Length: 195
Image (cartoon, helix red, strand yellow):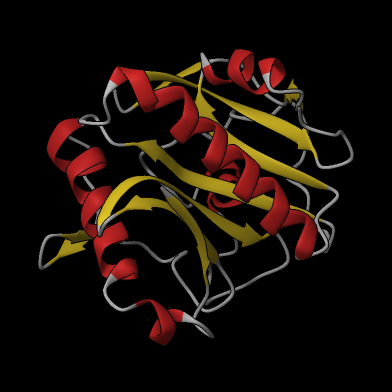
């Protein structure tokens, strides 16, 4: 099992890994979760998949097992900034605007985590290891990018997993039904040491 952080600067070094990640997102979010998202050629993408973002992929012999996207909260592309803030500003029809208790941050030391997934077909006997690899690389990549905290919109059950591995994960908003599943915004401190 390998874990790779992709950027526009290194995509050429990793063959089809980025397109495979977008295809896995298509299977996860469009085919299985039935979310109405932009897609083309069997790949899911949106306005936040820009050169400013990074993508963490857990993969094994060309097969994507899990992934997450990291986006700086300071980035702008047209009218968009990052998903959680844009939802709060009412720019996204599919995510409620009351997803945060306070105002969405715009700061160099805060990054957003979005499009977090573990593929449905990952066997139960390695699922925890895959999740640990994904979380560990997300933290390492975010720290390397200068993040002190990561703001994420995740399944409502995920904060328990984060705490189990030693992440300081605190709810930043109420639990909401988004696309048929319960989700919650969380602040994840990059200062804590994972075990």
